[in-house]
Image (tube, rainbow, N blue to C red; front, top):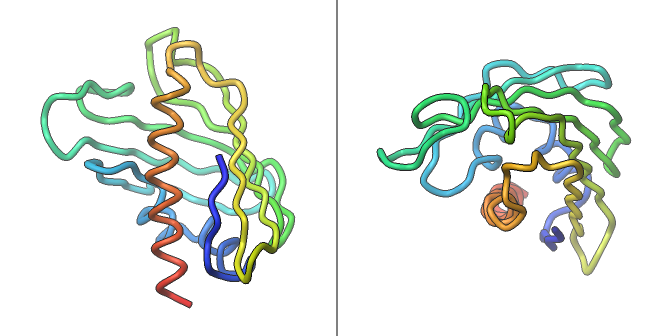
Length: 148
């Protein structure tokens, strides 16, 4: 996924690594985010839960919640964030470690953010993943474009 953001790379990079910012932008519409832990350094770990605002959709971890944990694999200041992510679930098709790479480049007076998602669990439809991340990247853009 690619998104042009009208903010400098350092601002976008900081929003990828700030737990308060992550709680605001890394959440699809109609969900609430909770950052339980967040240690943004190479080898550092994080744990986040996303809960549906309205009853109905089934969560991967519990009735209405998707919880996941991860690890920061590589951090290149203002350029790249690589992390592994795994859902906390007993459902075998939703298990497995994904890799998410955010690449930041200068583009058109702002930053082009490319999000590469690898090794999605077999039970996670790529279209659903893309929709959720499209919503999240829009929130990231809104956050950093208005905070600069």
